[in-house]
Length: 352
Length: 174
Image 1 (cartoon, each protein chain N blue to C red):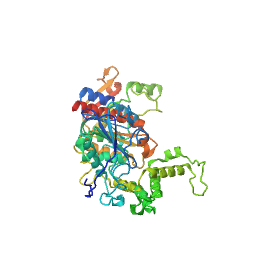
Image 2 (image 1 turned 60 degrees about the horizontal axis):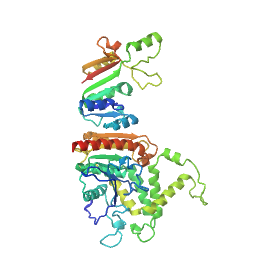
Image 3 (image 1 turned 60 degrees about the vertical axis):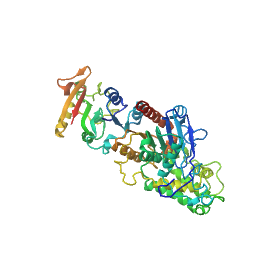
Image 4 (image 1 turned 180 degrees about the vertical axis):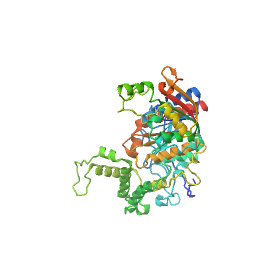
């Protein structure tokens, strides 16, 4: 495929999972899109959105055919920097081309075509998944019957870019990174772990950290002076070390860069014409304590929808979990999403 | 139509189901938003006091402010915004100077608690207290045209001395 940068990438593998049954009219398809560190395994054992997807759940797999697509640039089964470069027979490393959210979604359209599906009943995702939802709304409006962008933004802001940059610098500063050509030797584990730790801080809130850890000290305090002493330190280190086991440092660089490039208002678009002509029904969800993707950013999405006369609903869920709320407040989300999808599928049953 | 302060969406869903209007609502309470979504309504969780800047002038045929005006911080601003984005505005509010309220103040020396105004001073959501005469005078001062008005109390319409006897005032403005 030709990327937004003009570079070519291929062959492209895209990992995905499906849940539920596709109906005869192929009119019950919901596409689920994941965030920075997610993958195609959305539900089932250890699925990242297991509390929302399943029989009788928010995305009811008795009714809907749910597809969760991975992203290109990732390291969880799709083509990314750790994949073999057909030109050299070696892993791409940093020879992998820069990718964008637009490229990720472009790759997903091939998946949807491959499955013989024309229209999506709903496209849903949080954080970077929400950016992909917005991209679907703008780039493929005729295929998107409804959209649920959660805890996301029309464009990445300097503060959001700044946190990503610190993460990237931590990886790049790790001597094991070796300009990204570390495959086959030690991985930049320390750098990636630090990047993940920074990420985790931004996903929580002051209140959720206070509640989860307080100032409690670990019982198995490490014997040296600057070992993890407070519980919050132990938690971050554990999350960082664990992440290294399942994620590739180069993918982290490429995906965070794609997020930072994201600005759906690029080109001639402005808030007033962004969603012009979009027929999809939209549900925008934000969380009160999310300071990484503050609710004003979701309100901007709503504003653009209103300006285009798009049928929109907006809810700001009262949660203390911070940005992580989109993965944790699934009870509230379920209530909203279930009823919203009922309305959408009734409309399309009657109208089609 | 746009219903400002649509609450649990009762009026909105009746308008949509019985009158087949194309309507949406704005409401501050998260619980109320959930109730609206459960009925399939399109609603925004938003503070009306922040304005309606994203809507162009005359975006709606009607904007409704039903039992909302007395509960928001800046009713003057909200009404101005409603009149900008709507071709016509329907306002409904409790008449705070209705007879039984006057009776309670005058003879009992108490802040009135009536059927239309069931709250105590310490738990009332109402921030502004107005009567029908006050509202008419306000419209005159602001050059707001009153196209029609209806005054209601339990049992039906009030035609005589509405400022004294009506529990609710309804105005169609432009």
